[in-house]
Length: 112
Image (tube, rainbow, N blue to C red):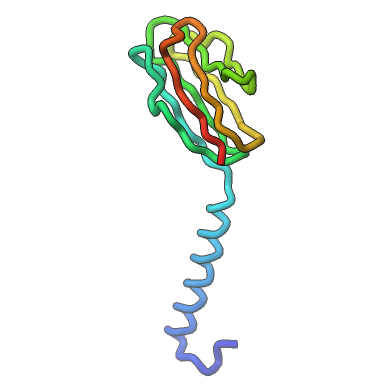
């Protein structure tokens, strides 16, 4: 296949093909996202993910929180201090959520 190319050029073409294949594979792999609960806020307040990604909420406050979708699509129940909860969305949509203990604490999960 590469007989007409010098060895160095053939090696570069092969390396470029491997790099392209690796980057395409990574684009389809599920990602992990983190939301920090601290100061009675969700950070980031708005998070965009893909179906199949994992979202982890971590509570850094000294009291419990929840991540509860207004639609009922997910509910972490109580997440204690220094604890976490994981969720893997399966379908696309925009999911506003809040903390049931602190209703002014709001966030939005966008699954695109």
